[in-house]
Length: 304
Image (cartoon, rainbow, N blue to C red; front, side, top):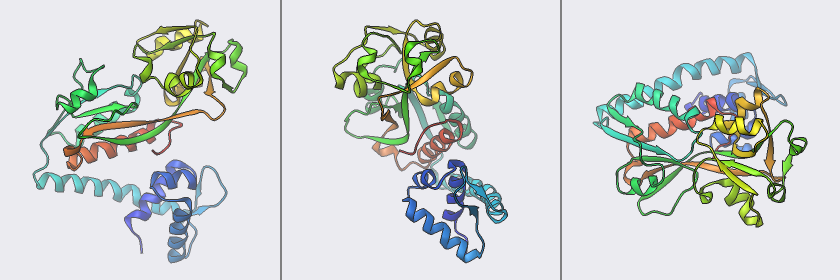
């Protein structure tokens, strides 16, 4: 009567809070997901959650199945890892580079969790690959690159992790702070604060300013997100960052966040790996852990 897919669906529904977002997480249409849940409820002869509530409110029967899922699904993952070790796939190397300056919020817990379950795999983030990470991946100096700027390279596979929205952070007293979104023209007289990377690797340029034919009045760089926020809060510029990177500063009321354009600018974060690594059990597990951890710790992201 019960299948693992049912348990995974209920976990996704609880974590996402709605049928639409849960369907995206389990890679089904909303119609297919609704049919799957309705079929299960008919088999069990009881509803599992209350319709038209957000976030989803589960019934006692639904809560019981969630408890079961929390017990069983981690055991399944552990068994899969053990079977991979028994098959002799435990050895490996995972040297990675990060092109996203604000990725550590979700990447470090991912690495910690991965190390607990794959102690035999050598994990490292070597220095010196900030600007040539993808070519280094192709040369086998690296094994994985976190990037939002995929390049066509032979033998390289880009595994989508999640989608995120780029937001513009402005000071609370900034004239733009009263708006919900900005146009490219409104940034033409602003100082834009960015990380010290090429403009061709920044979404605010490639997806917002450059297509519209505008450039900011001045560009200023800062190495750390907290430095950028200090400059923005003190009125010395504005900056565009992923929505999750702004969460703590918005919660504390340091800055305001505006959408880039009325529809917003959305991008996808990828894990780039070599084609021959795709079938390694430990690599598959790292990518799955990265997705699960991201949705557990970040706000405002969507399935890719």
